[in-house]
Each structure stands twice: as C-alpha cells, then as structure tokens.
Length: 305
Length: 254
Image 1 (tube, rainbow over the protein chains, first blue to last red):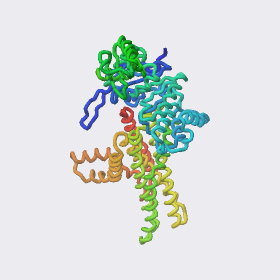
Image 2: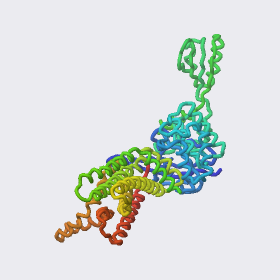
Image 3: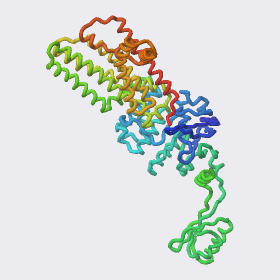
Image 4: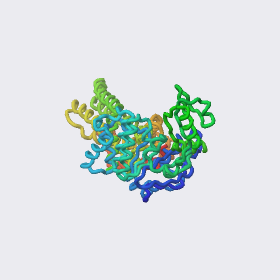
C-alpha cells in the first residue's frame, strides 16, 4: 500500500522560559501512514502530538529527522497542496463571515473564481453551516468553529487530512457529526491523521494507531494487533444468591437492591456461578465478557512509562 | 496572486479595525484645527494651513502604520490563525509581503482621504487646487512605507506594545538624526567623532522625506534630491523587509 505520510527519527527540542531551558519534546518519532486509512495518534496531554503535527506542517522546524508527504518534502508546496489541517481549539479571523473566510483561504489554493462559490456552498452544506454563511465568525459557538475549521481543511480536496483533537470540547451530537465526516472522508479515499485522547472515538473509527508518551512512540499497529481479544474477566449481574456464597468464585463489585455485580476472573468459575444461581433459583440479569480495550492498553502504556 | 489575497485580507482586517477610524478622526480634527490657527495668524494664513495639514498627514499616517503594523504578525501568532494560514501552500515570504502590501494599501487609502480633506481646505482659501502639495504627500507616503516595514519587523518577534515603542523610537530618531551632522562638524576628531559618524551612517534619516518647508514656501528643489530620497526610501524599506523575512523564515510557531 502506498504511503501518505512517512516520519523517520523526528527530534525536537524547545528552549522555553526567561532563562531558556531546553526541553526535549520529540525523542525520535518514526511512523508511517498508509493511503486511505484513518490513523489515530494517541497520547496524553503534553506527549508531543501537536508538536508532531506542527512539524509535519512546517510550522516548527525539527532538530533532526525526515518527514515526507506523498514522497515530497514536507516543506514543499506540492505536499501542502495535498494536505488539509484542522488545529486544536481552532481560532479564525473573527471579523470575517464564514463565506468570506472560506473565500480567502480558497484564494491561497488558487481555486478558480468560478469554482470557488460552488465549492464554498458545498462545504458549508457538508458541515451544516449553510444558514450561518453570512454570520461573522466572532458570533460562532465552539462547535460551529470546529465545523468551519473542518470546512477550511477540505477546501483543496486534500488527499491527507491532519486533524488535531477534532472531537475535543464538542457535545455528543457534534462529536458524532464530525466522526461521520471523518468516516466519509475515508470512504472517498482520503487519508486521515487524527490526533486525540478521546479513546472511544479512536477505537470506533481508526484503522491503525500509534501511541505517543513523553515524546516517544511506545506502540503502533492495527487495533486488532494491539488489543488482545482474550477475555480479561466476566461481569455477571445476578440476584437471589447470598454474597458469601460467591466469595470463592469472584469479586463482588457492587451490591444494590438485592443485586450483586460480580467480577469473575477465571472462565471455569463462570459456569460454577451460573450453576449456583440456578440451584438457588436466583436470576442472572446480565453476563458481559470484557476483552481488552484501547483504554486498557493506553492506560497501561502511560503507567509503564 | 497569493500575496494579493493576503494583502486584500489585511486591508479588510485593517479597515474593520476601530483604531484606524479613531486616528483618522483625530487627523481630520487636526487638519481642521489648522483653519483656526490660521485665523489667529498675522500674515500668510494659507501657509499655516499647509504646514499644520502636512505635518498632520505625516504624524497620523505614522501613527496608523505603527499601531496597526505592530499587531499585524503578532495577532496572527497570538490568535493562532497563522497555523491554518501557513499550512496552506504558501511560502512564508508571501505571507509577510502580503501583510506589508496590505497595510501599505490601507495607508494609501487613508492618506488619500486625508489629502482630499487637506486640499479642499486649501481650496476654500485660495480657490485653486495646489497640486504641488502632492509631491510632499508622496514623500510622506514613502516614509510611511518604511515605517510599516519597521513595525512589521518588530511585530515578527515582539509584542505590540514593545513593537510600538521600538517603532516610535525609530520614528523619533529618524527625524532627529540630522542633528548628528551638526555634531560631527563641531566635535574634535577622535573616538567621539568616529562614533557620531558611525551612528549617522547607521541611523535612519527620515528627514530625507521631509519636503514640507520647500513645497509650502515654493523653494526650488534639485531633481537629484528627489531621486536620492526616493531611492533611499525604497532601499531602506527593502533592507528592513529582508531582515524581517530572515527572522520570519526560521521562526517556530509553538
């Protein structure tokens, strides 16, 4: 599969403070993103996600390392012409209306005048901002700014879209809408590089992920490879059995209104619990086997570091 | 095309900025005030109007260039709008030149407005349009271009308040540096004279753009001086812009 984005041994140090003190932000990042996939870039706050994206976009210059976009150097205009970018907490020119803003950016892509109006209309429709086309951006809510940000990142019909925390700060409906747009981008054959710490969303839509902690990639691969399908434990919600009778079979998590939530670690004990409930004429309300989630993996990695 | 897009966007941003109209308001008041001063003057009243009017154009134009120019790049960095802008297929020099030309265009429009009011005021006194005033105004415009480039340079690495102070200092030094010439003549040869000479070479001389007295008094000006002043303005502006570009080219936007 062709590679959309390739990063090799990326290092970046910042000198911050009144008396400059060197802080290593990226310590040899290497990753590659295949064309047509949604790539999740996971990491806790301050891990170096935004710094990596800024390096890819040429907003900051790495100390060392190689970045290629579709085989071009990341600083070349060809690379930028194929890339779309939505920053974290997007701020735009608040004196402009939504249409004026998109019109201004479309000029930077040298989009022909005839196509501009149509394109802007289409994008505003995609992100659901058509009714607010003539509203100044200063009057936009957080969610609306995120959506206009999404629209500007798609102006050039990019092959690669870099999204920095696109779901942060949005309500559940807003998150779903942005998620749907991202999935649609993939269906159109675009590559999406998505940085986030909202794990459920990453798990839901990403094909591959890389986990960055303290400026280093600690794991990367397909979700299937990273997360084991082995059952970690089974949660059984039951009633009609005394808690002390279950003592050797599992760990009681909660007890409410005669119902016990039991966590059973050994698979053979699940059978025994079910037999016990049957013999006592009790009731099993639910039985959920829990496999490893991305959250388990992520928390484990961060703790390990 | 890209520089033009950024320039027109900068123009749009500037003309939607209230500070511009505030300065324009005071400039118009000041030009109007020259009429009042003229009434109190014994002798050539039109001369007073011309003197005060041209000085107002120069001073308020410089205020516009400094107060808007110093925020041009800083605002983009502070509001993080530069992230999306520079991620588009543009070179950094295109961004900076777009900002420069955008403000120059704004100043041109403002100077034009002020000049129309100024020339109209003279017209009410003399009943003729004094076109020669446009020469003095043209050189004020050249000076404003240079001040814009200086404000833009400071804006690349400093906050608007500090940049404004630096740019005002540049403006003041530029209009008083000619005093060094007198000092050099009067001072005895030695270290002091060498320092004064070096400073005189290095510091800007904005008086090169000041043709107000000559134009108002209708004094003859050799064409070579006009040419020298124009070239001085163009090359100094290019020099400052080049430094700004060199700083901006390698800047990290953290």
